[in-house]
Length: 221
Image 1: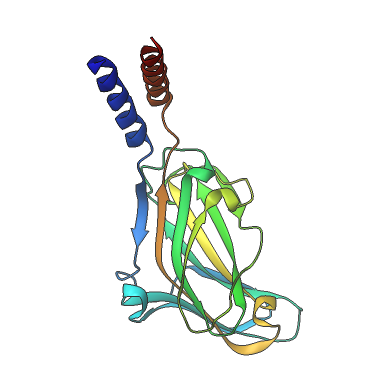
Image 2: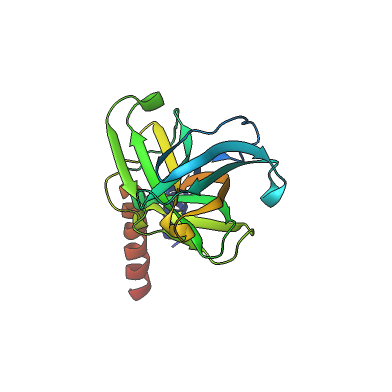
């Protein structure tokens, strides 16, 4: 009986160890300054994407994008891109094993953004490219208040291969999400983190199953 208990405990420990959360990267942006990586298109004018000083949500630096949208094309956007070209520890190929966390604030009620994940298999944008996108705009009802998001990547459209060594995440402020043409639209992003919780290993599950079966069989005898 004692041997079975030891085996069961060992198997349980192996299973729990195999599913422990791993931080792939975590960045409060405090070490960054100047212009952020990003892009713009369509009706965006007078735009900027910069790292600015701030004290919200425990950080002294945040990424801010600003833009006016003129009434020309009927669409437009400006994006901040978080880039990490030397990611390690992301061993699972399953998007659902990863969670993206960040803080965001907008300056207009019910404004929002698109969220896009891009990966390259090699370091610093080398190798094969892949991409996934959150299927809808993410909106914030209350302006000028930071909201924390934790989004499992299983909710993204399929496509991205998360084992890549380069990750690029884009928060795209879209014209239509801010009510159409206007001035002074703003989106702020802070505290970017990706964690991984892999599925239990086959060995751990096998040990746990065997121990459970033996334990139940012993109790019936």
